[in-house]
Length: 109
Image 1: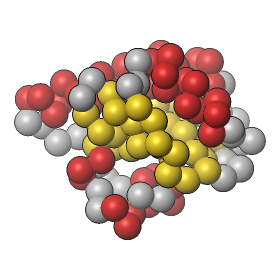
Image 2: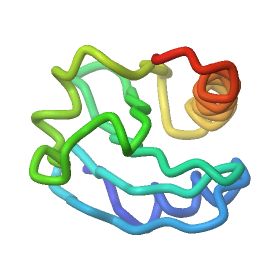
Image 3: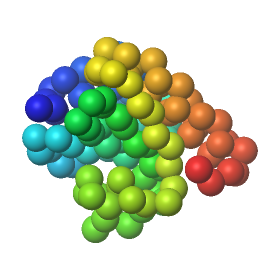
């Protein structure tokens, strides 16, 4: 089971400035995160054998679709996969940095 507190802790360790939990369930936590001046939706999900996250620029999704189910299937954004939450930290930071770089260059992820 995922905890919203654990997801917040991970995001703050990465360097996220602010976190607002939008949704929390037994297998998904969706957060709005401010990272390097950019608002991102970060969905952390517990799979059967792994944990994974999807990072989507917040402005690319209408507010009414800020739900775990919608985030998972939206065509924009990047995924990060790991065996556990500790391993996910570095991978999540790398993907969030890629989203920031893409936005600076005007590339949609």
